[in-house]
Amino acid sequence: MPHITERGSSAPSSRPARLADGTAWSVAEELPVAIIYNRRNYAVMLATPSDIADFAIGFSLSEGIVTRLGDIEAIEIINQDIGIDLHIELVPDRLERLEIVHRRRNLPGRAGCGLCGLENAETLITPLPRVSPAPVELSCDALAKAMASLTDCQPLNSQTRSVHAAAWCNATGDILITREDVGRHNALDKLIGANARNGVDHTAGFLVMSSRCSYELIEKAARAGIPALASISAPTAFALRKAAEANIRLYARSGTGFVALD
Image (cartoon, rainbow, N blue to C red; front, side, top):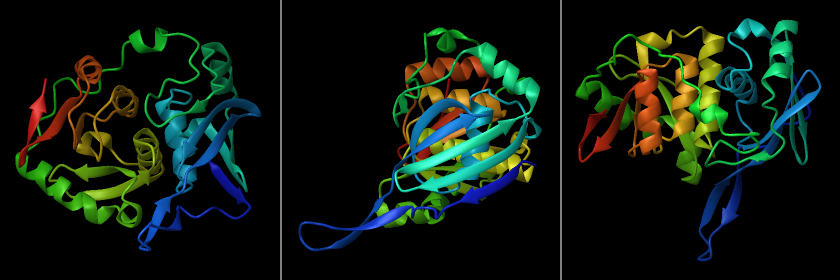
């Protein structure tokens, strides 16, 4: 388990606001998070300032920087007025791989595409690992149960109505853990990190996302070994192709139920 330290006061996840008609409301916070591996700048992501240690771990895993939790020696979270510096110390052999990959990002990460700062398009055509020998079949009851419970598991969204959630469910549809963020891919990174810290077996459940299913969610799920994903909205065509490549079963809401997508 990485040694985790934090300096400075963390920012709130939401702030009060007032609508034009005088109604009190809350808006989600979004701050730049600088990700630094062994004193090497890697990326700047815009994220909600909550569960940052989970984000550090999940991002490192889903980006392929590390392959297991033990590859991270320490995490230091430095809270500042203008954002967060996230210092991640890797074991020596993973640092060597980071130098070889040459995928260091220097542009702000944006909530939509997940591709900012890549030097070329080679990553998009690199085959994803197959996460299961055969597509996982989920019951309609399990999917409906999970989606019906999702709203109650999003405390930040209940305040702001503007953030995404990634939820981990067991095979019968019980939500076991949820993470929230303004960015859907950030929410998934936080969930992957939390599951890694808790030793969760990803073959024993499925992922629910409160968003459409786009390419970067499939990439992150594949690297985390997640075999099934259910989303509120339909996936993109590219996401479908990459899911088939990784043997990840996708489900999307259709009317009052859910359908499997091939």
